[in-house]
Length: 422
Image (cartoon, rainbow, N blue to C red):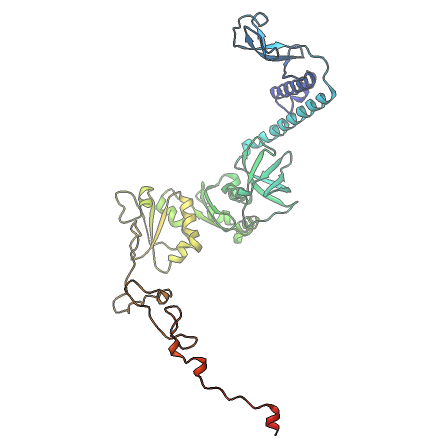
């Protein structure tokens, strides 16, 4: 019991006792050749081996059944009881197997106990060193324990090698090896890097309100200030943009936009869509839909109106700007040009030619000229492109179109070299 109390400093005492009972039961089963279990008596400090048997009126299998007379008091036929079994010394192979089981279980419990320290760090930034690669996952060293960076939590724009130092966020704690699951693409990574680079955020003067990321490409961060004399956007950018450049370098060149948070959705959306200049923002609901899409009406989205020149900047490359703004606000956003009607739910019909414009010619189907004759039509007979006769595809070749070889005039042969010499 002294050894158990010594191990209980790092591992839970109940887990140690469960591991000892499992190992002793395994050793007893392998030595005796039957299924046995073990129980540790903490008061006396001794192991008791027992076999589970079913109470029966007539014992047919002594290994799994026990008579009613030999069963403990208060039991009836059909009950499962524990019958103590005397056990001496375990075989050497069984003892080695039991020791391996106990060491593996205590090692896993010790690692999980160390990982429990990180349960309060979920969503926080940690510094790790890449140790090795297991498949598509990265195993990193966090100091006391190892962590796993799964492939789905990595950015496809980043490649890491062993001994690289990276910043990751603690995603979760799972009962596996290693138990600490990390993330590189979570919004907490960007929020932690900004907190690390900005003293005002660490002091609580500036607060990171929302983060939206397209990992490796672009991100938006909304910040606010608790002090009226502190500009939160300027504090996060740093002198000459030095702080936000350090964050972007850590994220392998990811472009980070810092915008001002506002409790009014319309003003917050105007800031989130920067650098585009917005003409009008209108909240859309079921009553004031006004031709907006169903998704916009059902979710209370925003209908944003911009000029025709500002439309590409508002949407961004492949729609990144408006998508990030929508994720930052948590509501859908639809952008329309000034003077254009909202898209709505009706599909666009095929538009005809404008007034005064010539109608488009329908492209000729290349297969139409090769179709066969329809019902009631005779096969077309056109000239054969190769020999000048009718087409072989549409009918038999007309033998009269070209004289037979016997009727053709014989070609004059060139004289032999001897005749020319004479």
